Length: 363
Image (cartoon, rainbow, N blue to C red; front, side):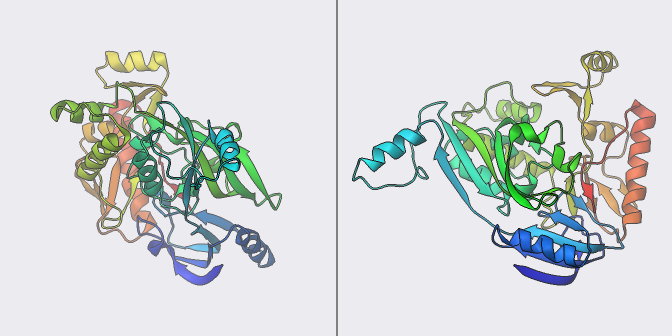
């Protein structure tokens, strides 16, 4: 466990805003989270669990408390359908074991449990799964951030959400001061929402998560931008690795890499509609996407159609290729961000009647 003092939050968040945090504690082993909690309690300081900083906005005054970061890394896979049989077979055999971690040639629809420690880069988990020919998270390629943060806002992209494959998470409960296993049903998943960013916000530290994936591939129809890419490039291979490649290219073309350009990824949530609202929107000529998770309008389209694409607002550039993204080109304060955000929300509200909601959480 490493304890650091007076660390600037602009160096820990990808929007590169924010003053100093009084303490930052890096968790290297599961048992250290309990010690970090006790450290904060002894000093009577609040706790904030920070992932890769890609979905967090920090304020100028900083944070007079303890920032806890999970730096534990690791991924493994277990064939959930045949695991018990395999273990029994191996116990009766002298053949070498590989614990199910490098098994190839799995049959179509074979279920596999992927377990990843919370400090692992999320995209490393997607790459691991795709290399094994497992479907379920390939459309979530190149989403920045850590694995422990993935279930917090139920990350999603191109028609997939993490809740689609989520099984459970090992957590530390700050309220009850104990370690627990939370199942999918405990999380209350919905669009960009779970108990971790709503009713139980700040209560749990995610040590690891488990996902159930399958040998196979995504089924058409795909998300519009993927379908367009497939048609333009005459692609017939829909394997997890190919979809990952396609998504990676689409994202690279549209979205800035937060390692090189300061941004927090998608800054606004998409607009979800009821069936009746969707019909009314379509009658007005608005592009409504019909997905497995309901009806929605891409907020990026609304921002672009409001005439804001490419605009510089208070030091923030509305990304020309993906208007959902704000790039911090010269802003130095949270006040600049608040002003830019207000202008965008007002413009969309006045033109279309929809109120945009910010996606990144705030310290």
